[in-house]
Length: 379
Image (cartoon, rainbow, N blue to C red; front, side):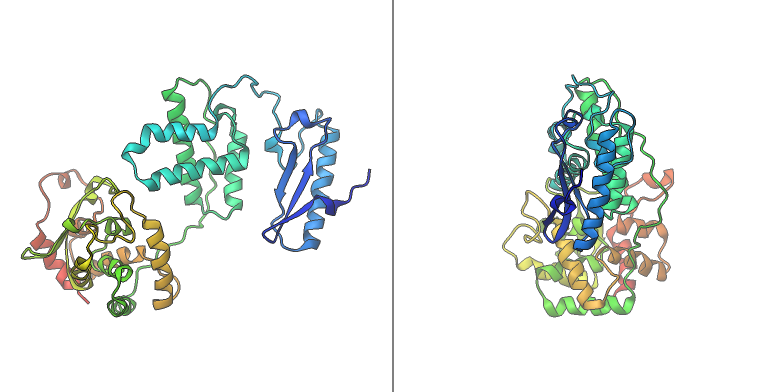
């Protein structure tokens, strides 16, 4: 039988997709009544060639469905002979809801959004199926799906860690028997991470001067990070009471809040205010809000992701490509090294974990000792 391959092509937002109904005589083997695949091209000629190839493979597969499983598009939609028709375990998205009911009270909105997003990734790639129906081969296909989306290895590992945690907790909490198909998925070694470059001193000065010239909330946030080395979420989630300006040495009392957790226990710390950070701390006191940066924090959530996108865009325009907000944190460590600051004091200022049993004892360094080293790096 001859098919018109162009009839299987659809255009969505300028990108061609292959869409073909599953024939009635093999429909019982599929979880969907149609096969829909992005052709990842905006060229009609390339789309037609891809559609012809996909259609031919599907035709071959459908003719020999019970003989063997060929390497065909959308194989994850096919019901495996070993599938348990009576699988009553919750679906992926139901499991996400269960997981968040158990976990979300103590976690931020960022955590909630990430869990839901990762659950949707699985549902889109493999179907919103019972969690015990996912096999190790499904997990491998999901890994490849994420790589095909252009995600780096680190991002793929984080998504898998989230999915594993969701399934593990739900199975354990509700006494569900079965295996977690995402438990032991192989991850290839890929050197595709992007290093966050420290901001060179001359560009840091230019950036801080631009912040003073713009003199608004977004630039106050960038400036307060520039000479404290705080993480973006740490700074964006500050309460005004966390900023101590009436002490002999002005400092930030960085502590966890209901709207913004801290990354580690050691992240809670006192950070002396110097240079651009002291300027910004004084400027933001003019807000009527109780929060240092009400544009990004309202006492319920701290939207650091929104701040990151806006600040990175402005930094690109101000000091050029290749630099992001987190690079300021790397810069602080390099600046302290340059004045021969002891490594444990650097860790105390930046909230980095210091190795060694002895460092867990005592109250740590006082603000005046930290300030002595911070003053040495003022631009």
